[in-house]
Length: 302
Length: 63
Image 1 (cartoon, rainbow over the protein chains, first blue to last red):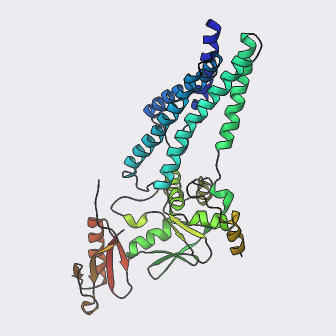
Image 2 (tube, rainbow over the protein chains, first blue to last red; image 1 turned 60 degrees about the vertical axis):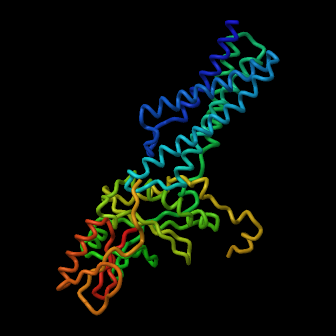
Image 3 (cartoon, chains in turn red, purple; image 1 turned 90 degrees about the vertical axis):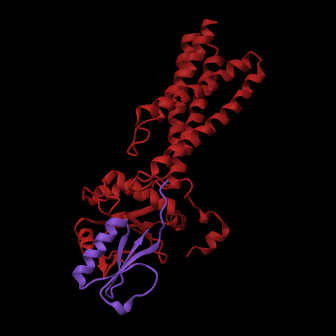
């Protein structure tokens, strides 16, 4: 009895550890709040318990107990909904919004991470219950399998970045009359002389050149461009307030070449870190397009 | 929930009376300097952006 309990708690602990490992605070500053941590750790605990209990239940020939996993899936869909709602609510307070596509991506990741915690719990409990050695050795094997699966799953979940699909390079911004331009791409019309001077003295411009037609379709997505603007503004800061909307960072497409021109007035005028920030923006799952995978798309390629 | 009308011309500021007519509020300025100043005021008050049509007419648009 006691050994069963030890095995189960060990599997649960590994699952929770997996959730904790995935819950690091990164530059998106989300979820950096202590309360966010509590919410996700408790849900991670539930997920890990469900995963860990499935194997001992099966061993006891309690087949009904496994159906509870289906119930769990239902619960974790709520997590996605919860994340989406709370992010949408704070969206109104952001000077440079994340955009619906980015929010959807973040919400999906939070749902998926619970399943990953459940999976780690399941893997570890399979090892500690099915390995034929004595308790200590089983637990060590379980620990190793847990850590390995944690790393593999985490690696597998890392998506592409803008730097992988496009060349990001510095460009010059200029004004043609009152039109703000980067190379041959028109971004907007800035009427006030004072604002134009601020753009010229503080602004930085970047050209994002897609590497192929897949990347071109992805960068054309408005959600992806908004994500770039949001991340760049979060990392570099932005000289902007609600009363001066003309300084909102802009990402505009050249429909001729598929290149994206991006302009921002950062607080730190450092082009190298801006380029690096944009290269590290994740490619959103919902913005990802692969026309080249279809026959028609390959025919259309020049 | 903050509701506002977007992408419509909130106001027109001009030095050329003969160039504008119509629905939006029109402000006539004596010279370029006054036009610029009125445009800044309206844009800061309404949260709109000043666009220059380069013919002595500014329009203020909320995006």
